[in-house]
Structures are given as structure tokens and as C-alpha cells.
Amino acid sequence: MKRLFSLFLSLILVLGLVSCASSSASKISSEEKAITDAASAEALETLARQYGDEGKYEYAMQAAKKLLELDPDSQDGYLLKAELRIREMQSAYGELNAMVEEDLGSVPDPAAYKEELARMYEEAGLDLIIPFVPDYASPEEINTVGNSAQNLYGIVWNADGSSVSGVFASQGEWIYYADPKDHYALYKGRTDGGSLEKITSDAACSLNVAGDWIYYINRGEENSLYKIRTDGSGRTRLTDDACASAVVCGDWIYYVNQDDRDTIYRIGIDGAAREIFGKTDAKLLFTDGVWLYFSSEDEENLVRLKLDKSGQEYLLGRWHVWVYLYEGWLYYLTDDNGLAILKMRPDGADVTEVWHYDAKINFYALLDGRLIVSVRDREGKEGLLALRLDTLEEELSLENVHSEAVCSDSRGNVYFITSADDLGLYRIDWETGSAVPIG
Image 1 (spheres, rainbow, N blue to C red):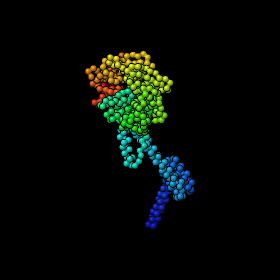
Image 2: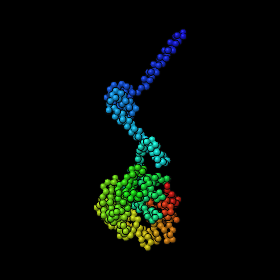
Image 3: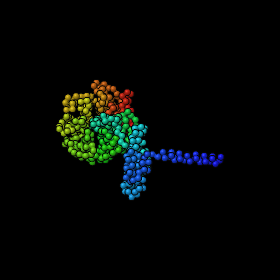
Image 4: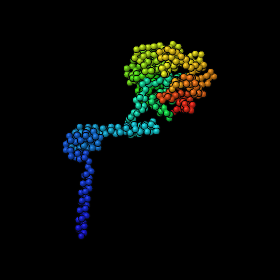
């Protein structure tokens, strides 16, 4: 009886082992079986490339290694192994980039996220390539002209008496700002508020934003023209010319060369095709997409030159500053027993006084049917006023506000920069009639 029981147990064990072996055999994948059955180097190379194309790099490497077992002297076999490993790494980088691109839209602090990622990759001895994510939500938001006249003209006065213009720009739901409190380093932020994110430490001015790029004059690099992507990548010097002012329109950047002030230059947004655009005594300039407007150095003459170079017109022959094109009219500030804001047609016709102030108008802006003016009365008190443009009825009065540039974004918000004792950026809250600090 014992012998029969022992035989029975042995039979069960044998059957179990056979079953396990059969089960293990059934777990062999079709790819592994194909590699096992392949009897030639040519067949194995074909499998390795097939599995590589399918992204099955584990099996592709198995096929390549077996190929070299059959032919250890195959130069092509060793190169195939390296090629497959490189393709696997590229695939992994692609997956990482896709993950980072997705996560960048969700992390609460993108700048800190990118900084920590870069640190981890540096410690690992790897190069991190963070995919570029544009700020605009749709192509319709892309600026065709890099900045408005009032944003380009907006001036910030420094404690040493020097001035910087064009420190604010906007595109879509984003604003871009050269912060005077941080040596004019370039920041960006949402138009709906929140903290600002640093793009570059370059001392930037004459900001122009178009598509994926910010174009600017770098005051720390001899006033040369630069461009940088809106995420801070791709920083590129475009020209060695020292620029006094610049504006982007389409594929061109128009600028005044400090060493050749009687000449307007233009250069492609890629830094190529630098050329003389026109010979004239020029100071600040802006464009409406058809004409380039500029003032003479002494601010006595206002001139416009067609972008296709087909014509040039003199529009005004008296002292003026802060020329803006708004709803079919050219507005400008001039002196008239105090200061006055006047308007005229773009061809110089129909000159009309809009608003007169018997003291100092520091800056002004036009937006959403409003005239926003920064003023200083005869007693030295400063403030910011908002008037209905059609009736001149006062809508807002901020007293004791020492403001510099008055700017606007593409969503209709109005901003101003306080003077040298603060140099803060504020947005006007029309509902509460107050100023909200930005940053």
C-alpha cells in the first residue's frame, strides 16, 4: 500500500512539473518565439528593426544581441544595437517632454517647477529639454504689431534723471513687464492678476510681443536688439546696433540707430536682412500696420512713412509728445497756456482740442471710450483721472498717485507705474475705483 501511495505521489509531482513547464512555455511571447526561431543574422536584423519601429525596444535588443552571438564580428550588428538604444532614449525623452508639457499647465508655480527639474537633471548628468508652450490660447490672439504706441511711449524716470520707455506689453491673456525695481528684468503674468514670473534678467525696454517671441532692447548689452521666447528660452542677439527705440510689424523690426539718428533701419525678426528703411531725423516711432509714424528729434515734426516705401507725409509742425492712434484719430499732447490734448485725422486734417489742463499732464492713455490722464496741479499735487472721452465727465479720481507710464493690455485693463519712490505696477479696478498692485 505504501509503495502504491508513493507511486501515486510521484505521478502527481511529474504531472505538476509537466504542467508548470507547459504553463511557462505558454507565457513566452510571440516576439520571443520569433527571436528563438530565427536562424540567421538577416532574419534577426529584420526582427530587431521591426520591433524598434513598433517601440518594442526590449525585444529589439534581444534580437540584436542574438544576431551578435551568431556573428560576433558584425560591425553592422554593433551599430544596430547603438541605434536601437539611441532610439529608445529619444522615445523616453519624447515621453518626458510630453509629460512636462502637460504638467506645466497644471503646476501652481511653473518657474519653480522648471528650476527644480533643471537641478535634478543636472545632478543626474543629463540635459533637460523643456518643450516650449506658447502663452496664447489661439492664433487669433497673436499680435501682428508688437506693441501699441501708448505702451511704447510710456516712460519711467529713474532716480538719476535717466528715462526708460516701452516697459509694458500685452498679448492675449498675458502681460509682459520690465520691472524697474529689479533693474528692468523682464517678467510676465496673467491679465487677471496674480504673481509675475521672471523671464530673463536682461535690462529690457521697447518691449514688443508677437507670437512666441518677445523683442526688446537690452540696455545691459549696449542697447542691442534681442529676442527671447515667452518662456525664457531661445535668447538671441539680433543686431549690434545701439537702438533708441524699436517696433515690430509682421516679419520686420523697425528701429532708430543711436549712432545714425537721421536714419530708420529695419531688420528681419530672424536677425537677417538688415537694411536702411528711410532717411529722416527720427525719435520715437510706432506703426498701424500700414504707416510708420515717428517724431523728429526736437519733437517739432510728426511724419509718417508707408511701410511699402511708397510715400512719406509730414503731419504736424509744432511741439508735441505722446502721439497715439485711437479709433481713426491721432491724439497728441502739446503746449497751450498749460498743456492740451489735441486730435487730428491721420493725414493731419481736422485738428480739434480734446482736453485742456492749466498745469502738467504727465502721461495719458485712451481705452474703452476713456481718457486716462496722469496730472500734477500748480501746487505740485499729483493724481490720476479717468474721463469719458465723449463728455469729459469724470469717472475716476485717484489722489496722491504719482504715476509714470499709463499702459493697457489686450483685455481692456489699464495699468500705471508709480514714480521713483515706489516704482510699483498697478491695475485700475473700475468697480471699486481703486488701484490694485501687480506682482
